[in-house]
Length: 406
Image 1 (cartoon, rainbow, N blue to C red):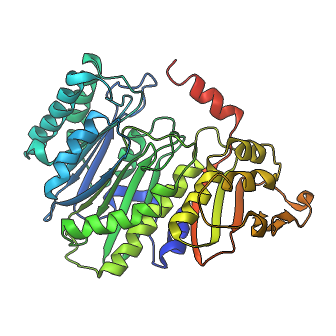
Image 2: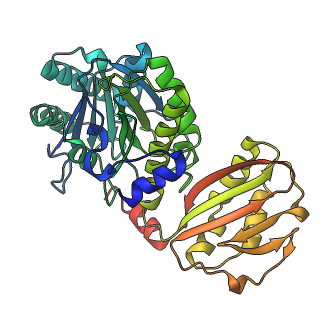
Image 3: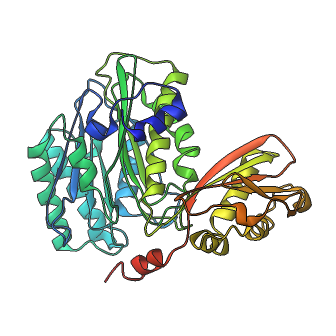
């Protein structure tokens, strides 16, 4: 059992398997592949394919809430509308966003190529892309279609790790997670390292299960899981155009778990993958967990936590190992949440530096040198709570994003 799945256990209380081994192919009934099609100048893998061999073909998905949406998102929304999908094809090395009618045609042709290779309909193929916006010319199209052919030939029931590697962009490592319970499994893979903000983050996520569940139940469970996991990763406050989280069920285990148990397992995988996204954020030196308690509602707790997560002064202070709690109070004061600024407590890495809106323990007692950083904000007006995951603002983040398209 890996540490990564230990974190999933902490969320679900359920037994886990080694997520580094299989990812999306840990569940029965799935094959996957990751291949090199020449979309990346680095020569690294860049096209992945995940296939559901059934007997069920149920699917659910959630997408970016950005009004500017890439062609694969527009296509895939239509695909999952009937709750049926047999495959997901993903490319890195180009977002195929703002590429005009040619770009949408490329998405359609990609789905048709998958359908022809697998003997299924193009309307049952989810398409995902990630990379630089504005990339989608004939060279890109040819590379993606070439990748589809290569990936279809390379499909294997242990191809999860290869698929996870092929969807990486600025990620430094592949991201996988698995939870197994009573003869059925939930497995997943994700990519994402920048543009991490709600509306999912700049993420592509494929989750598979061999549980026998219909599409409507998958949809309810997925939305409940993403609401408290992926939607609360707010690393840099920037929302992507391509975010997609897909959940497919093969039914190959023959098991139909109760809704609560499945929800726990699915949320555990999503939480684990979300934490991996945070830990691999571009240029980050600190992984900051902002826990807000004592709010009048969960929504207000989220609002307060997000206001701190998006405050550049606070994030820069953490990068400099400076426990500047005044910046926390200033950030939450910009919200419309209910609280008295002179009744708020703030703790940083276990040291309560602010009590009732005034200095408490010495800031010098706070050690911000560890990468893991915990900020606890007690609003003192209710019983609701929420947690937001963010990162510090570093020189490396600025450098990486200043040169992203060069």
